[in-house]
Length: 131
Image 1: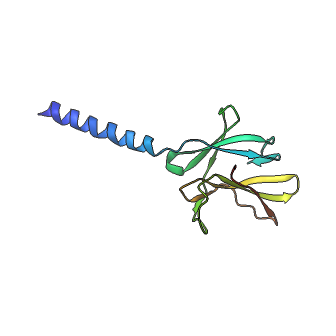
Image 2: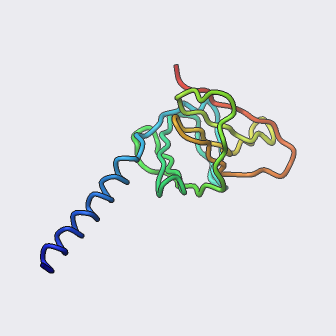
């Protein structure tokens, strides 16, 4: 009986991990037309991919070859305003025209993610979904 219980428990754990893995979203692509910062690291304009990790507690940023270049912690989730576009949308806090910091990441089919809060006066630069 102990062996059957062990196998049943092992099967349950495997199913839980499979379900969590199945919820992971495919990488979402964005073309960022300007230099930007994630934390204190500068990134050149270009194509980047964004992936949810740890059930949305962290986000991974990948370069155009899908090599991981950064991970950011999610400060909080943001409720969608209006209709969700079904596409990735990035919001940058623009302190000056050349000083843009990634602040919000909106993934299709889920809430937004706040990854940076800027206390100084700033505008928003939005990278819309790709067409």
